[in-house]
Amino acid sequence: MADTTARGSNDSLIEAIERDLNDVEQALDRLANGNYFKDEVTGAPIRPEILTANPLARRNK
Image (tube, rainbow, N blue to C red):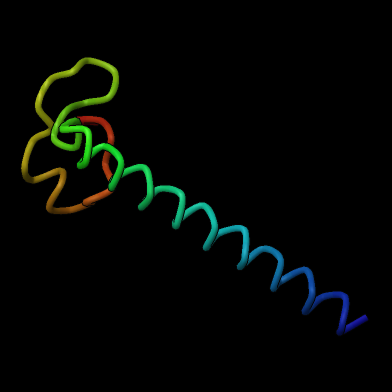
């Protein structure tokens, strides 16, 4: 039982790390394409304070 619980916890942790890594890769792609500082929906510039708080931000919200 404990082994199953530990495995489930590890799986959840791995999934969270994979999501974070995917977010970082997307941010690097946006940076390479010149879209890092733009809201992905509106195209408006993302406010600097948002990017300072969350460098992976894709929106002004």
